[in-house]
Image 1 (cartoon, rainbow, N blue to C red):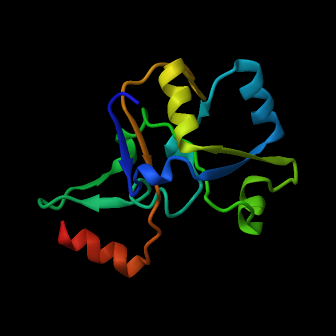
Image 2: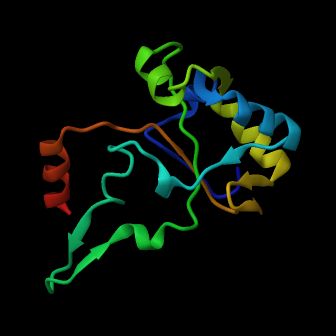
Image 3: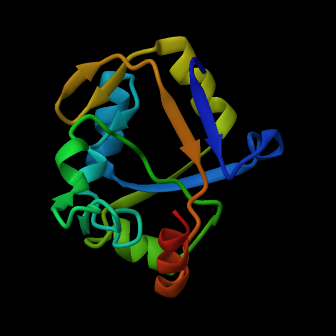
Length: 150
């Protein structure tokens, strides 16, 4: 992958099975367009994944700002190492109209390298940079501790 970065992953993770629960409509859209579909990260509901995006921060001079003003160009997908999870089914298939798909990181990377074209919710685009990583879920106290280190 051109200019790609692996975060909290190493090469041994590339061939592990990963899973994603999506709506049947999204699956049909993927087949019809023959492309991966990436929604805006900014609209994700997950509290932890958008912790900083949805937070108001204070600069040293006291001025308050929000990070989400700068996130209009970031798109992504969420996958899991868990083959089956009641929580994931409830979150990503609330109307029981979902389907679980399976692949590996290597296959996704190869597909992106081969196609170099992605369908975003806002249209078709081409990107030069990609980030693939494992999310670290931290407690609120650990997040605050990490912020203080910076």
